[in-house]
Image 1 (cartoon, rainbow, N blue to C red):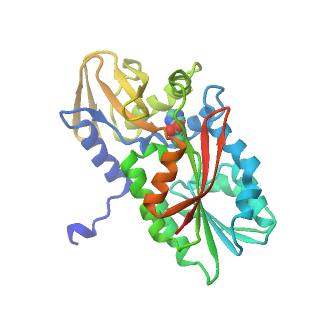
Image 2: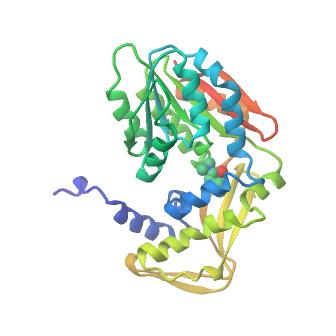
Length: 322
Ligand code: AVI
């Protein structure tokens, strides 16, 4: 077997990423995708219910109000592909509006089987919707969907909930460009993006008074203990949410309360942390509406419509591939 044909299993990739993020001498970090094991996903669901975290409710409000306008802007027959399986009501509004114009194929794409099972439970019985789950990461999953496309079918891709905000800006741009390259002219992307808002509102959203976001963040270390035989003492770390004004992003960190050494057995790694030193676990970039339009244009889309929630600045952009 050549080195190139060795595809890392999720576990070897996990170990490699942990070594890369914690084994270097510079700033320590862990990829935010590892926040979402089963416990992390449940904690995130709880975050979406918190009074301080208005993002998910704003996304849902916009879809409830504007789903029929989205449907009126698209031609049938239509395939809908959702990147990250939809959680219930907000995708339901869209699918119901779209099926008024005829039956459609709906493909939720998610790396997590549990998320897809939940999605079937929530959206599997809408009249006129033929649903087929794709267990995959986003772009390879989209390419699978597109390989099934029949002549004359248009495609609507949903990328909701500001997941794009968890990419850095360059990676977000590259992702949109790659996504556009898979589509044909006239296909559409509905993109949800969280907007810049007052700093105290953002800090409360990412460091809520109930401590759910802190638990979500600390679960990253608990996961390393469970899955890689690490010995993180969780009480020696605190959650920190920091607004980085230069990059317009919220950063989540885990701050070491003391000088300590942690052993990660299965990664064969000893990590030395100074008191106050942090492990950077997530960035959540915030956008301006015109910036979303520019980014879309650079990727080869034209913005057909943009709807913004006033109560929690968040925007839904309907982008058409040129
Ligand atoms: C999934 N993503 C859009 C969330 C966000 O707001 O960046 C993840 C999150 N992290 C802490 N709270 C929510």
